[in-house]
Length: 349
Image (cartoon, rainbow, N blue to C red; front, side, top):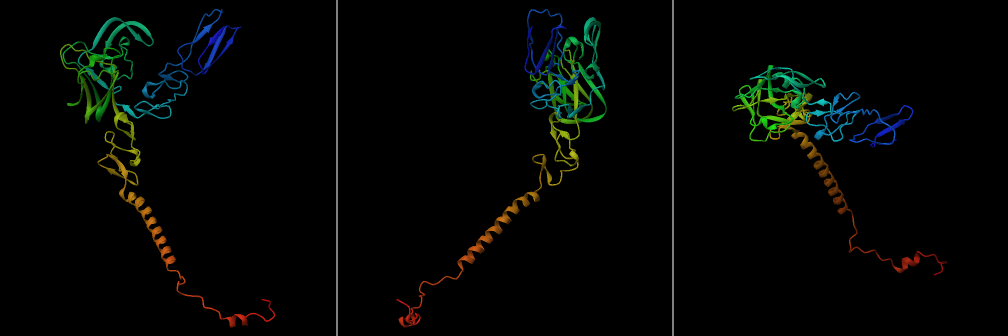
């Protein structure tokens, strides 16, 4: 028997037991087995691209939807928005909507329908209630019946209520796997304030990121469709709040220059001011180096340069003032008599 397998996998054939055991870590879509031996059972153990770990229970959160290492969860090109850490397993935000009280204008129901439940298909009553949009199940395949859905009606809406007001500025809506246009023209309200209105066909993604026009302190979020005979389907709704130390869109920016890493989750304004050496700049909306520190860094080189110039000038001045023989001064002549007197008589000339 001949087996062709991808790089990163090691296979060993046990003829006596007619078993082929492959171990390792690799991404592949094909495994070739060629030979005359009969193969009765093939079992491939591995994780789907979006999962990792020994039991494939951990979700990958890699950028651009890329797969992570199936064992350790490492992402080659960084984390997707909203996640950080070595394994991209630490969220930069938390969802305040999950498990909260919800309601909608009506519930879509079916009797005796096939429903995918706990890994198997069962015939059961289907009731697509409002709580299915905040149950933590992000499965948006409509046949699995894991979404909240109204009946066809005029101006349907869905809403979630919180136990206290929150400053809300961003949320994510998980659309149906197909029929994305069913959410065309939806609106999001924070209390009575309009947060967002979908225009035309610009919001037909699988996951729709919503950034409110203005943050609002509200204790409820409502999503609605306007018009006759509309059906509202929401597979999951996340209302985002940044974890301490993060702010901005999908909470991806860090409050690293703020005291205690505490800042406003929308603007990034430091709650307790900037760390030593920095001041808040209203124009750039971030901490910048204090002027006095900038002046110090600018003045020190200038002072050193000035001292160096003064030293050079003093040296040049001393050099130019050194004593020098005048050109019109002549060496006094020695007379012949004095020259001859200086030579002993027995010297041969």
